Image (cartoon, rainbow, N blue to C red; front, side, top):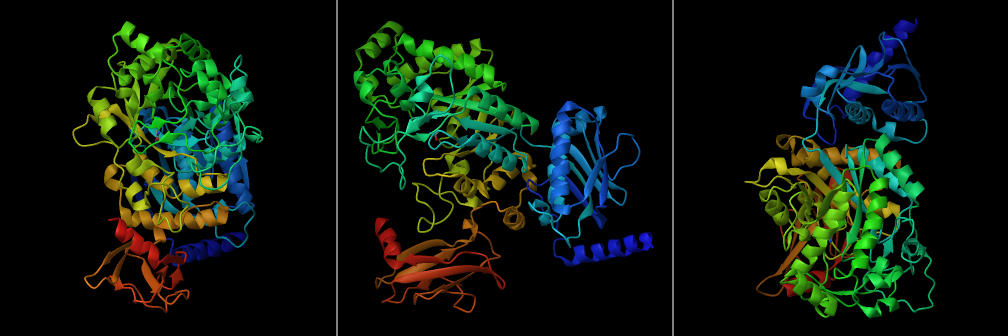
Length: 636
Ligand code: ACM
C-alpha cells in the first residue's frame, strides 16, 4: 500500500511539475552545461544525506539541512556509511582538471541527488544550484504544506569563468551592522559570488577598530544623522549630537571573516587613502597638510567637493592625508599591520580615488617634497605616496590594490588595479601586466538609479538592468590572463538601510553574477529576463527586497514641428505591454496600449503608465508629469 501511494504521488508530482509551467529550469548564474532529462525526483520525508566529514563541510551541511528542513518540515539524516543516500555529496580528487577549485557536477535522477566536486567550495556551489532547482517555496522562512517538493531530472556540469566574483559594500557612508553584512554575504553566495569588498573608511566614517589609534572610532565613526538628499545637507552646527554611525571591533571583524570563510567568501578590506580620508583627519588632524583640519567635522552629507570642473574635484575642506608628512606613513604602518592580521585575504585595497590636490598645491611641505624627490606634478605626488604605501602593504605580506587613479604618475609592478572609471584604466593596467578587476561605472555601479528618476531615489546617474547585463570584463585585444575578474559596487551615500541596500543590489547583482560565473556564450538576455522573474517569485516568498525597475518604461520625448510633445516608451523586454492614460486615472490593461510614439493631448498634464505581461500586472504605476518631460526636452 505504501509503495502504491508513493507511485501515485510520484506520478502526480510529475504531472504537476509539467503543468506548473516551471518546466523551464531557471538558474542564475547560468550553468556551463545543463542537460534536462524527463522526470522528477520527489524528496522523501526522511532525506538521507551522505557527505565527507571535513571541518570545512560541517557548516555547509548544517546550512543545507536547515535550508531543506525549515520549509519542507522534512527530516535530513546524516548517513555515516558509504551506502546509497538520497542526497550524496562527494569529493573526488580526480576532478581537479575538469571541475577546478569551485566547479561541481550535479545529477538528479530516480536514484536521488548526487553532487561531486574536487573541493568543498564546489559542493557549496552545487548546493546553491540545487536550491534553485527546488520549488520557489524552498525560500520560505516557515514550513509550507501542500508543496510538491520535486526536483527535475538534470545533469549539470559547472564551473566559474572568473576567480574574482566580487560585490562591494560601502559600510562607511552609512554604517551597516555586522548582522547586515552577514545578511549581505548570505544573499551574495546564493549567486556564487566569492568576494566581499568592504569599503571601511571614508569622509563619513572610519569603521574598523585600530588598537593604539582609538580616536579613529571614538571620533571618526560618528556623525550627525541627516535624512533626505545626501550631499545637499547643511553643515551641522558644532553642538549637534554626533551619535550616528558605528564601527566593527576587531572581534566583529574576526567573526565576519569566519562567517564569510564558512561560505567560501574572501573579504577584501579597503582603507581609502589619501583622499576620502576626512574621518581619519578629524580623528588625527596632524595627518593633514592643512592647519585648519583641527576645526573639521566628520562629514554628515554636506557638500565638501566642487565637481563642476570635473575630476579631480576641488576640495572645500581638505579630506586628504598629507604625503609630505612622515607621521602619515607611521599611521598607515600601524593601520596596515592590524588590517593585515585581521583579514587573511591576499590583497589590501588602499583606495586612491578622487583625491583632490588643491590643498596640496598650497602646502610648503609638499613643495619641498617635490623638490627633494624630483616630482613634477600633483599626480606624481600621489604616486610617491602610493609607492610608499605599497611598500608598507607588502611588508605585511599582502598585495596592494587600488582604484585606477593609482596608475597616474606611475605604479609599482606588483600592484593590482580595480578599474572603475570605465574600462580604460583596466585596459591600460592589463597592458602594463598588472592584475585587473573590472568594476566600471558603465555596467557595475549599483548605487546608480535602475529606472526613471521620477520614481527612483535620485542619484546623478542611471544603470538599468539590461545595461548591467551587457558587462563584459575582458575587452578586445586585452590578454585575459590579467583580468582576474569583476565586481559590482554598492556605494551607500543614498542607502540608509538594509532593505534599500537589497533593492539596489537585486536584480542587477544577478546580471553581474551571470557575467562573472557563466561562459560568455551562455549569456542570453531574453532568457535572463525570465530567469530574473523566477528569482523575484523566490524573493517574494523569502520577503527579500528587489527593484522592479526593469518593468518600468524608458521615457523619452521630442517636440514636434507644431510644438506638441511626442513621447516614446521603451522597454527592457519584448514580453512587456505598456498601457497608459493622460486623464490622471490609473491605467490597467483595458486602457490604450502603447504601440508607437504617442502625442500628448494639448491640455494634458500627466502621463500614467503601467506594464503587463498578458493579463498580469508586473510593473508599478508611474505618474510622469508632462512638465518633467518638457523640461527634459528643453535640456537637450
Ligand atoms: C569610486 O567610485 N570613487 C571608486
